[in-house]
Image: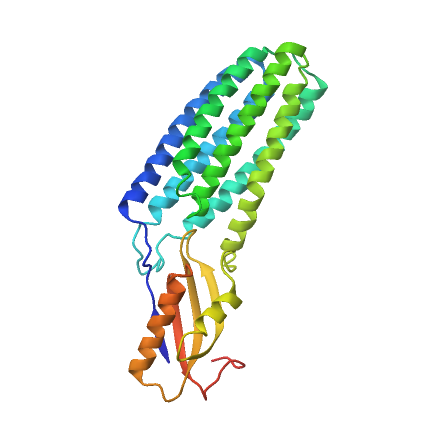
Length: 305
């Protein structure tokens, strides 16, 4: 039996990592400042929409901090106890982020229905001013993640949450204007329910995707049949089977498989075939590959090898 391991040829260079670190630190700082502003204003005027948004933003601060911690842990080198290092923390943090946001939805909706039954007078102008600050802060911090958002689940999560926060703040601004001119104070509680719905929609995909990766499911951007067809186009590969694909982190995937080759293939030819397979898989975003090579007549597809 012959085994082969490919290593990550697309690891982030230091510049993108520094940019991501900077984006997280700026995002955490600005959003925590905004949380303080919302809590002070919300308590002073008894606005549930501002306090709900403050709770949501505080959860986002926590998720940003956890994501930053995960990015730093993923750079820790593997050791004898953790042979993949701490790469999996990025997936676990993404799952934790989704769970925390879902819990916040329940708290917001519960308080909103209580407020609808007992609406209190609110100064719409203050709500508009505070929410407008939120639009600026959330949009600005979201833009820091825009370039890297399609490369990592946690970065995409940060971007989606911050942009959804900006739209939530826009909704609160509109609600504040309506309250200012109509004195329909129940709108404040209704807005908090809308905020909860926005959080749910923006979080659900993150929850499902991170749960799948936690359970070592095939990452959603990969398909085993496609991988099989692609590898079997390589000269010298008769077929590939016993394929297992899973995520090591939110950016790196692994594969183990058996490849069947001609029984007359020399060791040099087998090494060349493995090299081509690893190269092809690397371009399919599978960076760590373990291959077991078997001669054609051995054919262990229907047995436990």
